[in-house]
Length: 434
Image (cartoon, rainbow, N blue to C red):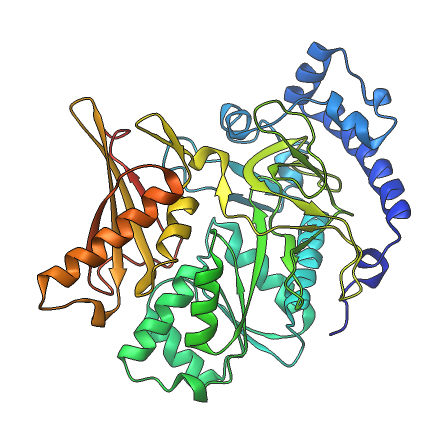
């Protein structure tokens, strides 16, 4: 498969480091001179743009997180007047003020190039017909991928989110060859197609570009089996651009990172110190080419590891491991640190469990209660109560062996856990709601 931007995607890593340093120094000066928040934070640390002499000097700069973007709502982090911003996106703002991000004309061109790169990495070419199932509107996912796919020259169907029957009709009538959506929605499309008698093998669909939420290998395998496609993962976040930050090539051995446009650090989340290559840590991103909203050392809270070895595809850009866990996903239950991905891994070791589950944490008196609701295959449901009890016990023991906690396991029928076209909610912590 041709490489979209061979000049940068196959760049010698020493030349890449020099390019990163030039762009880092420019960005720091740009942010210091135009964003009061960064000027105040750097002055407080006694740091000036001239102190950035190497890539390691990025550690002199202040960290940024969502609170900074919320505290300066709506346009306080912009480095250009609003009159120079040609588009604004934002988060949903369900937990308070939304995070607002802006783009100059040049920013949009950069974004389009990087999403074209991601789509090309996944195998999308000019002859493809691509159906976008992300939400349009203020969310960055739909618009970001849309323009990148158009730049490749492929045909785009901006189907948007929801209305699953219409999605399936378009796939059949329009000859969709590539699907862009969340992995959980792809699986839901497969379920509805099967229930409605859609002849999935007859569809020309061949590849999926999935993002917006973490997914396990089990879910990827299930999507590929039921839709008959190659499933690829891509990564991005609105605060630093949107989709296009990293994407899998057809080798699927990690997501190639757009290092020519972002400087990536992987840090120990408890100490803030860099970890060794290949070790897991929190991904921290500094933008290198953003005009409207330059971001210095943004804490993503996503846990990953980086590999800088060249890929078999010919690209030399570093690869990040697919993100499955976030530092702020961690639940403390009866004094034990638990990540939802650990429970998911335990569940998928038991045959008969569908890739849909819901973790519910509550408190009864002074005691935390952990319930795990799981969908199971039709054949698991039996008239013999003893069989059901034995299966439930086996699942509970598997969870206990992985996380060290006893959980109450509830079996539910296939399709009974809520599906959504957006990001799927896997955890309900009622302790936070009380």
